[in-house]
Image (cartoon, helix red, strand yellow):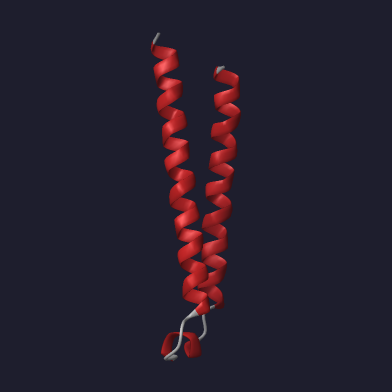
Length: 74
């Protein structure tokens, strides 16, 4: 069981890194027109999606770490 959780933890950490890089790339693609425009900002929406994904993956990783700690404490 612990091996399975460790594999899940590594996957969650990799997904967190993926969403972090994706958000940074979207941030770097933001132009001045995007920042000064009146309409909906597509770049900002993509940055928010990446941030939400990163936060979700971090939460999953924390839960997996807690499960590992509980299993090791027995």
